[in-house]
Length: 337
Ligand SMILES: C[S@@+](CC[C@H](N)C(=O)[O-])C[C@H]1O[C@@H](n2cnc3c(N)ncnc32)[C@H](O)[C@@H]1O
Ligand code: SF4
Ligand code: SF4
Image 1 (tube, rainbow, N blue to C red):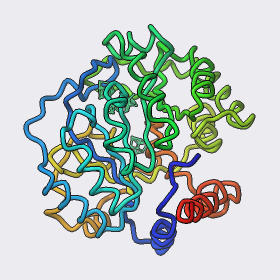
Image 2: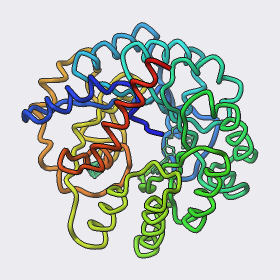
Image 3: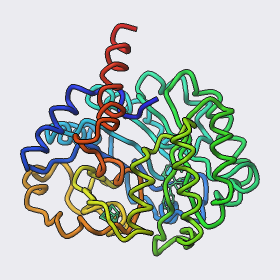
Image 4: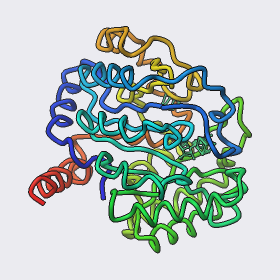
């Protein structure tokens, strides 16, 4: 199952534009709000007050500006995106323009599936441990059970995966989480926790993390349902343990805060602090005047939303097959199915 299903034609064109040397975002990530019903230890976002939220008209204005700049993939998150009362309307507008995905903690998913299923190409439900460990990390008891209920109600209706954040407290459960995904009939994506200044510092000890990354790489090679590419695990191993870094391309992803402001250069460096509103500036001009080069060797985080797009290469046949050709097939199948 691939998160890139659906907008193959436009993406190919966009990627080819990238080859010409001009930098433009291909993927957008938008926090619809900071408010959340959970209290995850490693997360800074629920701790931020929401001043105000964009109206549906402003969301549409934002989407039009992004589509105009060539964005093809839109991912909604937060805070908890399902707390937005107008979530179905927002997703519907997005689905008219982009391959649309959402990350949710799953608590409200079972009750919302029928309202939103037609507008999502992909959904991620966050799970950081099995049972009590998930509840402890997420700060609210019952959150594991609710996430599982959400996955059970949405699987088969929306293509989906578990999203798991590896911290120092759950590293040892990576094998259990892969098994859980497999038992539930969904795939699983891993990313490594980053220590935001306003959250509990739970990022894993790097020496101990190595074994988990190697384990996940071999699980992926063995055909377990892991979304991350082999190259994702290799990039971490080569950079953090081998001294041979990857070239980060944060310009491929444009992040937008709940007020519609652009977060640059990436989610991490400025801890999700936005500046200009998307529809009030010329994205192309901003993108091509920004000093992206100074971040190319950063390698500070391994957030999959930045690392995976940074690794794409036309010279890697298996990657081209997995990310492009398989999607052409699923796209065509989707059109005639
Ligand atoms: C911020 S949440 C927003 C969406 C939704 N509330 C959820 O939890 O899925 C998006 C993802 O960020 C992850 N996350 C939270 N804190 C993080 C951190 N310190 N480093 C990396 N990822 C983190 C969460 O586990 C979740 O999968
Ligand atoms: S559920 Fe998501 S937004 Fe809410 S506190 Fe946890 S990681 Fe943060
Ligand atoms: S590696 Fe550095 S530049 Fe790239 S996304 Fe992470 S923090 Fe940003």
